[in-house]
Image (cartoon, rainbow, N blue to C red):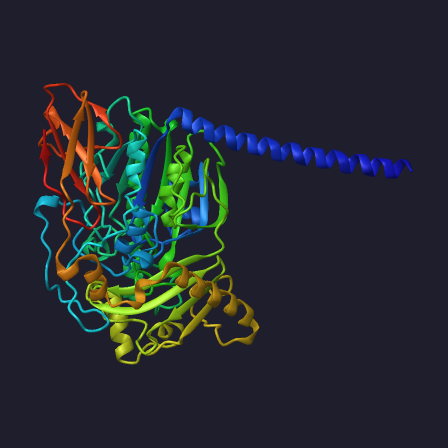
Amino acid sequence: MIMLNCIIKNKIFFKLKLLLGILLYFFYVFSFSNELIDKKLNVVWISCEDMGPILGAYGVDEISTPNIDKLASEGIKYTNAYSTVGVCAPSRFSIITGMYPARLGAHNMRSGNFYTYRNPDSLTFKQNKGVLDKSGKNVPEYEVVTPNNIKAFTEYLRNDNYYCINNNKCDYQFNSPFTAWDEVSGTASFTNKPNNMPFFYVKNLMVTHESRIWLRKDEPITVDKNNLNIPAYYPDIPEVRNDIAIKYSNIEEMDRQVGEIINDLKQNDLLDSTIIFFWSDHGGSLLRQKRAVGNSGLNVPLIIRFPDGYRSGETDDRIVSLMDLGPTTMSLLGIKPPLFLDGKPFLGKYNSKPRTYAFGSADRFDESTDMQRSVIDGRYVYIKNFMPQLPLIYKNKYREQIPMNKKIIELNKNNKLVGDSKYIFMQTKEEEELYDLNNDPYEINNLADNPNYSNKLIELRNALTNWQIDINDKGFINETELIEQFWPNNEQPLTMPVEIIVSDDIVSLHCGTDGASIGYQLDSQIGSKKWNLYNKPFQILPNQKLATRAIKIGFKVSKITFK
């Protein structure tokens, strides 16, 4: 009886202790969320290009990345973060809008030359860029037109009095609206922001981009070529080792640049009031990585560091999509993200339940098209090939500037590839692919026909089908038909001019184009690049000058209206 009482007491004590622990945890999270809102913390995004989780913090010991590793040791490291597309422009569309590219017709790479912000008054579009859609029709340059409720998520931050700065890449499948940023240029810096405003700063590091493998071929190689883990889908030849060594050296240089950003924050006494995000826009830069719809093309590093050590050193294996980054930033700053967004916050006040799957798409990439869709659950990758008659490795002039890519393609053409390195050169594809990343990290053993995996195959097949139905996947529509929907008769729609209404020195601004954002300038601002974002009526002095204009994503900017 005494022993039974002791057992009962111990169980009660354990339950009370567990309950107390849970309450303390939620109290901490709630307090942390409120503290973020009260303090108006700054947020810095450090984005890099074309890189899977090839970092010391992710267990890659052939490379030295001390600055990012330190960031991971002081923050949260996510192991199952994915882009929506394995190439930059559609991926960045999903990041700036919080929406799947295939839902809104932004899935083809790319619509036009919008790498950086362009003056909207001098935009021109090529009518023939040597690209055909699936029906064989010419694809001109165009801007994707989004539904009326879709904004650049930074406008929600600007509405909450955040100073938003982009240095320097946009590439959103539309020209960045002039209302999206307070500053966007190659020299933009958080040091320029007004003293009384918190800031959101994006620094885009280009050194790991695919193109830097040939553009930086004469730079010093800082890793040991002989100590490299060569993916199984490549032959182990000198050209492969050399270009992977260049790629890794570029990553080490990128790490040095990350260190400079962190040091700048320290020197400006901002590190202790800033949340830092580090991420890549999609997976790796090499053959069967960039543009791929499986894990090699979509899995990215993601690290988030908080100024007070919140969850310091933790590894989080929840599934995260890059289109969640904007809503998560809003949530951390106490701003409620719109519920209609595909992107969902995974931290902060409005934290949502974890995703079950990450979905990816692949369509036209430059001059070639091959429609694929994928779903990843963290371990298994399912790929549906909608054009199985085509080879997996298609012609792409841009990537063939990488010497190893050109060499491997040549070896395959001469039938000199064997084993796993021959796998990615299948001349036709199976309609379905299934890979177990735990046992096959390089995705070279297709399990789709293996009866031992039939339940997983059916689960992921159904998940993908349901997702495509849910988003009304635009990949089934020819691109020229999409362009006609965006721009009827191939003519870009025009945003209507802003109407200025003044009553008792209170100014109201209205635009007749649904979904348009309005910017305005006062007095000495007029004629500059700086536009205030209009969100509510404001007071104006009797002799004060006013200029205003509007923009809807994908439309021509309105003419300027003056008062």
